[in-house]
Length: 449
Ligand code: S3P
Image 1 (cartoon, rainbow, N blue to C red):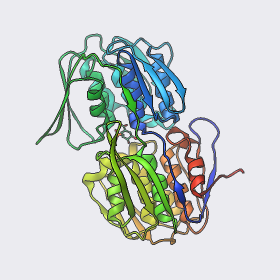
Image 2 (spheres, helix red, strand yellow; image 1 turned 90 degrees about the horizontal axis):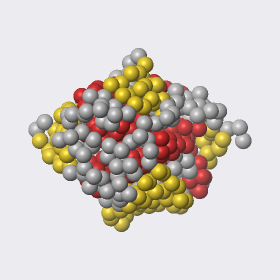
Image 3 (tube, rainbow, N blue to C red; image 1 turned 180 degrees about the vertical axis):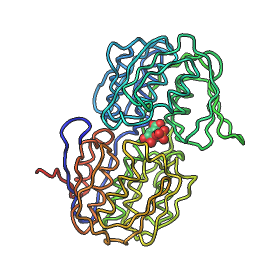
């Protein structure tokens, strides 16, 4: 079933060599944060390269509902006129975050220390996902949450009128939870301290500093200790959003498994808290050149030249999990075309994403003739070598964009076509996926055409 309306069945067929240039859209994590921090600043924040996927558009609508002016000038080119820290107005309507866990959790954080009440909801996928991981630390600031059983949406947050700063050790590796606490800490007096035992994506820390907040990071025996001084005056910025390494993963992985391919994916963020997939692929024998390494918009970026490669299965180090958490679905597809087993451990967070991604990938890979072993925290794929995957199945996508794109990539190199029941969620993060893949020569079509 589709999250936003009618289901969109799609089919991918074995394709000739993929060639050309794949300009993937802006980073989703940075796009959400640019809109949110712009809304919490004084003045006009200008954003270029903003991802115009549905998740980010839902966050833009939410920022308007809290009183910011958000204007689109042209493709990826936006301005946000902020209301300042503590300046949020109470929304008149329910805030619908669609499919976006990042959107809803970050926005809950940034309204939780203002004396306002807001009700949040989302699509059928988001309404199944746990919000307690965010509302627990927000309660320490003095906010109250009233949701469905198990801390599910729809949920009302009553912001703290008199917030107190907190010290919080994040119990699971989650940049969303870390960021929600930091954003709440912005409107609490004194210092809010967040400690993460495993480092997760650091865009919030980088961008909060960039917008003028006082924030320090210290690596200690306890973990990464982040200290934020509350009630700063955030100053509007110009944000150039780099291209999303999580979206780039799809054309990159497709080129690695489709024989004869040779593509260029320019300007992809290589932030070390995000690039675990690329390190893993190189260890598997992938032919990837990282050309023109440089800094863009405060992030390290490179142009990736990627060629079809003979790959071998590996043990993916558990400590790398957070830096590639969104890429395990497409890695498990690549692993199916490698020689030998690929072992992915420490991946239980995948079970609470847009879908249970371990289950979704295991079932779809099995249906395509690939042997898979699965435990609560582990996924093992038995590779069948280049060209060795039978395919020929219809895979369920469970309102999950990354599951949808992963199985379409699989179909490009499988022996028989691979269908998905619903490709509509792809628009949440990668609205130009079909056109971009077609431009490389990939055979992906809407099944009813
Ligand atoms: C994100 C954090 C990650 C990631 C998500 C984006 C972010 O989620 O899976 O796609 O922008 O902070 P978790 O915090 O749940 O790991």
